[in-house]
Amino acid sequence: MTAAATPASSGSGYLYYRHTLPVRIMHWINVIALTCLFMSGLQIFNAHPALNFGKSSYDGTPPTLEIGAREGANGQVIGVTRIFGKEFDTTGFLGAMRVDGQVVHSTFPPWMMLPGPQWLSMARSWHFFFAWIFVINGLLFILYAILSRHLSRDLAPTRDDLRGIGASIREHLRFKHASGEAAKRYNVLQKLAYLIVIFGLLPFVVLMGFAMSPWLDAVLAGWVDFVGGRQSARSLHFIIAWLLVAFVAIHVFQVIVTGLWNNLRSMITGRYRVSAKGAS
Amino acid sequence: MTKTFRLQRRLPRRHFLARATAATSALWLTGCDQLSRTEWFPRILNSVEPLNQAAAKLVGRRAMAQEFAESDKSPTFRSNGSDDPGTPQYEAWVANGFSDYALIVGGLVAAPRKFSLDELRALPSRTQITRHDCVEGWSAIGKWKGAKMSALIDIVKPKPEARFVMFYCADPMSMDGRDLYYESIDMDDAMHPQTILAYDLNDAALPVPNGAPIRLRVERQLGYKHAKFVTSIEFVESFDKIAGGKGGYWEDQGYQWFAGI
Image 1 (cartoon, rainbow over the protein chains, first blue to last red):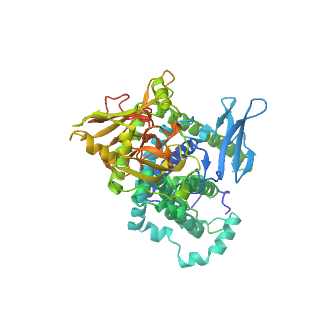
Image 2 (cartoon, each protein chain N blue to C red; image 1 turned 135 degrees about the horizontal axis):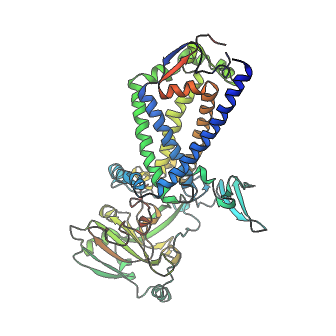
């Protein structure tokens, strides 16, 4: 079958218990926590919409990225984004955009931020609350994944998996997806993506968050210099946040094209329908 | 199932999905913004503040903030918040070079007293090149010299019940000249070797925009804790009854009292 042809909720086959209850609960907690963290993070960034690399913001070099607004010849607000010294008019989506029928200064569209209008202290309250939720949830997940052997059984690539990377890349590029019995296991690219996110991007984004804290910086004075300094850490925190958005975009895309309802149900009830027919 | 039938079934479903997504996100957004404006929800969000503080104390109660080389200093040290208190009293101080300025120290202490600028300069001092992290997200590196807060504490001798040190400032935060800026720190931070009452910035007398004649340096916390234009210091048991009751001007506006993150 081709991925989208058969509605996954109908048809033959059987229901396979794919996701255990703890994984499902922790997955959805993570969805909420990361969403709140990302949106409140954008509101925090909005208080100083510039990125520098180095030990401080003011070291004699201009920001690598800067999102702002200036007034045009007719008094209209123009969104301006400066990146690597090049200036772009980004009115409409960065720096200035239409809000309630009027073009106003805002780093990101208010619908992307939490809270929507400028409110740094409230954004910080949201951010730190969900940071605790996210970190505790993440640590519990890792503990569970190890103890339940979810990590070794489902996530760790086997030697055969690794040998098949080339083939898997070709299949992904042709939007060919596993079906039948093969769909019960994660494919190798999926496994690697999950592992990179779980053990790479997520811990690193937390570490870069710690690096922005003047108190935690002092715990081992100078440790933030391993990424170039505190402002580098802030920039990396921002960049990784967007890499996570990219991961989520691909993840959701894959969920949709490999059978939205079947995948969604498997992350809610745990049951995933395995089609009776073999691979396409 | 015929092809047409399938198409008919699918299109409404797609519309439904799009509408459901739009409705959910709209509900989510207005919901979150409305939650932020309630009294109870921010209280839940802020319930982690003691956790932040406890975790910070646990991992580095006596840790020393990173100090930098001369070459790391920012070309100019950015001023934020009040640039100039602009009150008649402050203007008079500036006019005579702070010669009749005196820092009043009192509250729960055995020996309350005043310190002239010269007396403060005569106290044991510390010079440190540190990074100033603003809550907004920027940072700047500067060289500070000032009287050690611990030396001042040795002189005024706080009583055992003193738990916080209040810093009252000369700069009004509202247009009508009221709401003078203030801040507070706990005794741990007050006794920390890097906590100083700075009178020099980058080897020159502290300029007005950076808080002349005295600014608190409480390295390891965000910029708003570093009270500028300090005129008096009070040792207290609690700040519940002072101004908004949250321990600082920005704290009263919703910012965290513990500004180590």
